[in-house]
Length: 601
Image (tube, rainbow, N blue to C red):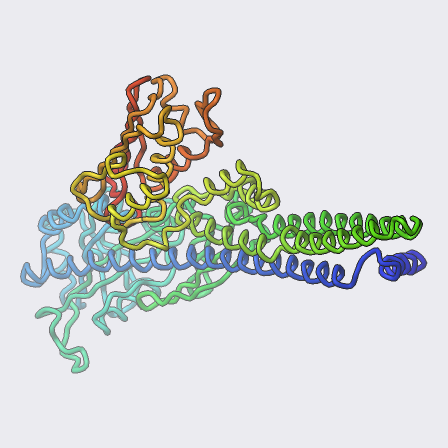
């Protein structure tokens, strides 16, 4: 408490003796408020984006499961159609040929096989056995049970891995029987509750997938009870194999488990997993209604998700704002203290110095105004941090669209630093390089003649000095960055020409359908072949003594702009022979078509 009281007295003494004015205090308070406001907003936006990433991963997994099961259902109904096309039944050899034509192991990953279950009335059981044994002498139905219905598995392909299932009467067990009866009653595909497949040596959780077929076809009206079940086309699944064929765990940052009726049939929440997160950032359970069953999916994020979505931008914004606050407050104290000393000195001078004292007071007032403006421009983070927040948002949009995205905290820290030293040309160049591609939302049709005309005006060139040719008349894709590429190439041609008045530049744009091929040729001093790859690197310049200063950013921006669209920029030049830069630009959409992504202009 004594220490706090002393601190308050010091602040009171500063204001009461004119060290800091109330306007300075107001500016400091408002800027601090804006700093913390920007930090809070950035933090909230980061949390929202992270949660959206989890939701997207969750929805992707649910969608893939539903879509894959729908694909399996199509295979079952194809089998039903095959049965009906053969007069309501098929022989062992006919089914084998049909299953082979389906190419189950290639087109339906995760499925164990596809087979037929026949519905056998008690009075027809012996004739059924005889029919099956004529095809395969060793055929037998098992196990014995007391239920009045019999649903033996007659065929299944591939049989080599499912041999143990041939002859199994699925009516012997409640989950198999219940789903079979539900499928028969509704005429719809149904899956069983959790079971262990007889052919699964690992004894892990599985299920069966049924699609019924009826005597006389599937057109009978089930509401009238006129249909008679002949059998079902079915597919057995081991859940572990199904999920392995569905989506690889190594490609996801979200883990999930599946339970059916309170029984876990699939579980990725293994503490022994190197990506297991004991305190996941997000978790959620989703009920998936699927073919007569309810699967409960328990989603949790992994350590990989935590690492991929650990953003430092809000903290960097806060630190950057506080650093600026500290610097400006220090400047205010120094300037205020200098002002006080100047007034004390003026009080001690003689009457002969009163006129000089008045001038000093005027200079002091101007200096105070300068301090206010300086504090407004350099300290208040309204513009700097606000612009930084916008850039971070734009960077994150690019990040989400990136195939191999990984947060780059160093770049964002550089962006914050760049706002503190915005008057430095090199820093401004680095900022422009980092923002390359951020203006794609401003796409509007660009007439090439207008763009080249603007370049002639900007660089003071005549129509004969800067010519446009080719069969393309306009650009519609990422026009902002296209213009910036031309500006850098034309600007370099003018800047480094030994006689700018004699510069000759030719811009050629050819419409190739899905892309534009662009060439910018000049008659300058040329570039030695050993420097062709180096000139596109950041901060690299071939400036000679007496030539204009260069940051070495321009061609790096050209390269980045072109490569963001899947193309490359190349140079053909010899010393004394001028230079020709070639690149391609997408015509349809912002991303180059796959067949052109490996092509350099």
